[in-house]
Length: 178
Image 1 (cartoon, rainbow, N blue to C red):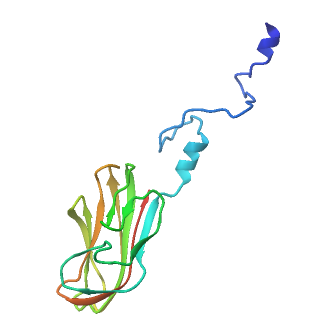
Image 2 (tube, one colour; image 1 turned 135 degrees about the vertical axis):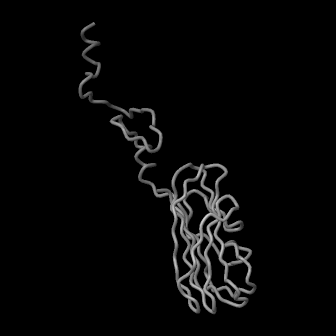
């Protein structure tokens, strides 16, 4: 029996051969347990999206404009690692729970009263910022959101105040898991 026991790996510092496997720990695990390559890959992979307009958009009307392809036809994704952003609806809706940093950058011309940038969570105004410029606006705002990975979503809207003719020359929306 000793020859068979000699073939077994020792408990202390075993030299494994082949391709050993192990259970993959849940995201965010912070213990002394061993990490599989799948856990490490998920921990270091960037997850998020970036979408922007590719050409200036002349805007009319003083109503809130949802950032989607209806109001901004040239809005398209630069990258979206997990299909979390839908340009048609303008919704950022990740399928993983977590904390996300979402931001909007807008450059607009022809505003006399400035503009407000709104963040909607699940269809309700959650946060907004007034732009710092009036005639020419160039502002970016970012907020962290805790999202549940199933029903929670973020939308972006621009309110030009009382201006009825203005131009958005640059618009980018982004989101990433923190």
